Amino acid sequence: MKNIQDLNLFIEDNNFNKNKENSINELLNDHNIVKVLEKYYLSRSDIEENWIEFLDYKEDLDICRDCKSLKKCPKISKGMIRQFNYQNGEISLSLTPCQYGRTHFNNQNILNSILLKNVNNRILLTKPSDLTFKQDPESNGTVIIKMMSDYIKNPTHRGFYLYGSGGTGKSTIMGFLIRCLVIKGFKCGFIHFPTFLMDLKNSFGNEGINSSIELMKNLDYLVIDDVGGESVTPWSRDEVLSAVLAYRLQNDKATFFTSEYSLEKLKRLYTLKSSDKERVERLISRMKAVSIPLELKGKDLR
Image (cartoon, rainbow, N blue to C red; front, side):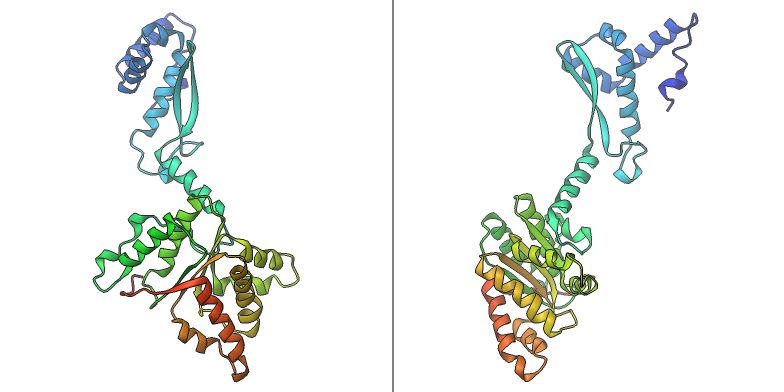
């Protein structure tokens, strides 16, 4: 489509009025312009007086006509569309998000509100339509999703310990949960525990390590993903995980976990030597106190 400048409408010659008249006739036959005229009870004279605004409005909508996604938007202001405004006899244009822009900006707001995240954004933006457990007759995912949905309606100070085989959708379910809790205005975090520990080790000596652990302690809702998948050490077990859970338990902060291990198997995994028994018992006791164990059954969905 030609730009307004390419129409040579502003050349001061005898054809100017004719070109303008033809342009206005085209505008009057455009269905988007007709809708605006009908909505605000405007006429041809209004187009004549605000010709450039009407041309800009039509051109912008023409660009968006066959748009299928934000990725293919050719505009400089991606995800934005012209909005026609008429107030007190004055016509003006403003920018507002299109349908794809609204989704993008809403998703960005959600992601910006989730702290400590070190997982794929796709997990954190999981919507109900992304949950497809009904396709697996061996899965009890639908039942668990119902439990999560009920929890979202009435959140408590106790989370869930969701365990099961790899690839059954544990992280996806927790992503759905956290997304919904963030939308409700809660301060939430989601960490992949093995990766988080590696990042902590790399930040030794920096202030970041203390601020990250303090965030873990104080978030309203925290998901600790893939517990037991880390390289277990006395430091990770006692000074990070157990210490954080002790604080969250004392302060009624709900904690959620995903793991490939049941709590009984996790106890054995965390017992590095016989003298660890008491520490591990204390850790498992805290995990039980802040979360309800749930097993997710089903096939590998990866």
